[in-house]
Image (tube, rainbow, N blue to C red; front, side, top):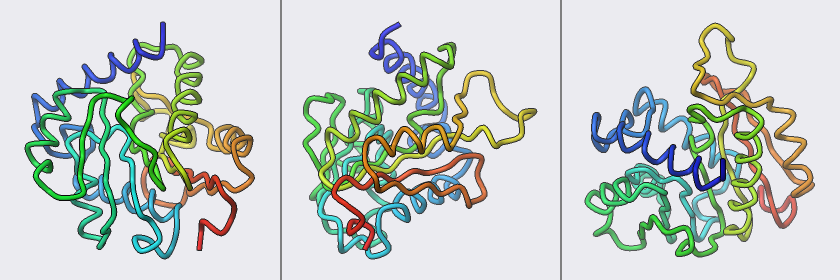
Length: 216
């Protein structure tokens, strides 16, 4: 199966969630608004303690219905937000709820996603459905390379962890070895942060593309 096949299957899965739950955390497969916000907190915690003033633009890769755009506004972010999602229905929902705001754009065309200071991806590596683990791992590495391609300064993303309770794992979700993924990211940059110290069965990685000064 190709990467495009996995993207299409995931988009269809999330469209079913959207149809069932609407433009809510449940519509993008999160348990609650609180857990969604905690994930956002961790993504930006990886990037810089001085954000939002230190970040001029953000790409939201797998933006769903655009919840991150509101989160950024609440944090005082005054830069450019660009949301990308493979699901056109998600983009329609995002545009209805967010599209009228200044400094926000949404697209389902990956080619239209311009480079930003920072690209974040929340939850895009979780739902593998029937994909074999080794093929999904390759898909994750390809997607991380794509995150880097549209980023000038840093990328941040989260992944479910193999440190979670085996008895509570779902067969349709992918759980990654944190150190294996950290080691891969170190081939992309010497400057990588891994956070595994928050109360969710996942971890967050930040990769700084231009040196350790990106953390300050």
